[in-house]
Amino acid sequence: MPKSKVTGRKAASAASKTLKGKSTGKHSKSAAGSALSQTKAKNKTTSKSAAKSASKVIRDDRTSRTSKTAAGSALSQKTKKGEGEQKATIYGGKRKR
Image (cartoon, rainbow, N blue to C red):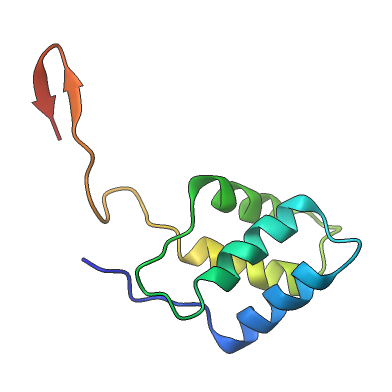
């Protein structure tokens, strides 16, 4: 099932401001970049590393509200376990799903 979420205007604006900030940390920029790349792309999802960064940004008390808005958008577009394509794992010669 294709993803239906995209980054909204408010979150995209927050992501842009976050990326332009000179004192913005690497986790904030990673999450903001992920959110901004999903502005009009229904087929893109947040990567595992960007989701980890977004989670750190949201939990950090020192992070600005703007960065947290962008991180929240990126995190909301992460595919959850059990959604999307399932990966098959091979155990002892047998395929399991």
